[in-house]
Every structure is written in C-alpha cells, then in structure tokens.
Image (cartoon, rainbow, N blue to C red):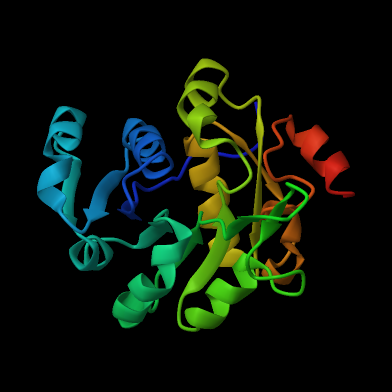
Length: 218
C-alpha cells in the first residue's frame, strides 16, 4: 500500500495531446473510473483509438476538451505549447492544469538541457502563463514508453516526481499519479522543480519513491 487513495469522486479530465504521454495516462485514468476527453487538432484521427475505450472516453477539439473537464493535462510537444496556451488561457482559468511537457534540448557536449535555461523551471513558466489556473508538474521525468507497462505490470512500485505551489493542485495530482499506477513524490513548489526538467537530477530516472527522494536530495 502506498498511503494514497484513488480519487474519491470520478474526475473529468481533458488531455491535450494524445501522443506517447497522453494515451497511456488516459487509459490508466479510464481504468480508475474517470471520464477522459482526448483533445486534438483533428479529433477524427483519434476515432480508432478512442472507440474501444468505452463510453467514458471521447475525442474532441482542444477547446472542447478543456470546456468539458475540471482537470487538464498538457502533453503536446513543447514547441506547440505556447501557441496552444495563447488560445486556451481563458478557458483554463479555474482548472487544475498538470503540465507534462518538457522543454528539451541537447547541449554541444551531448547532454540534455532545458531550453528555458538554468534560471527558469518549466513549472514556473507554466504558472506565469496561466495565472488563473492551479498548475502542477508531473509525468515529466519518467520515460514515456514505460508509462503503461510500469503502471500496469508493477502498480504502485515506481515513484513519480511531482511539484506544485497550491495544496489543491497537489492533492489532485497525487491522486491521479496514484490512479495511473505510480507513487507520488512531492518535490516542493514549482520554482523548486528543476529536477523534473531536462538535465535535472530526475530527468529520465526510474526508481522507487525512496530512490527519487534520495536522488533529489530530499
């Protein structure tokens, strides 16, 4: 047992970006009893994926996915994020937003680095862009190709680092991390979440909750 309960009430979740992060997490959350709307520029392209998932899953435009949801996962490619938020910032007001995007770059010597530079975390950037939303960071350091297998084959064994400034965002995010089959490890506020960004201490790191805490110096 992890000590974290599943969400007591089924949530309505909008996933913006039905790719290597959004699809496995959506499947986990549907299995946990939530309603999931997969947002896309072209919802029709998701029909073959969504139809077998049951009546609590549907595809919609990005805007419709946000409108239908209390919690929104940002999982589009990072270069598309700024333009997407320009269009949806007002619709995201009052909602919990979990940012799973990564501003990933590679340095001249072949190391992963954040395109935001060393002084700005992705979490702080997102919170500044969405001042009327409750922002959290999660699902950023874990290899996306393992999100489904590790969450189903070894549920609640692997740790998942998260960060947030507000208690409400933390509670929702911890519950959804649990519902995806992982153990949430809260690292602190968004300004303290560099470990989750490209080049950070946890980026690409897979371990137990205790292992994540040790690697992050907690």
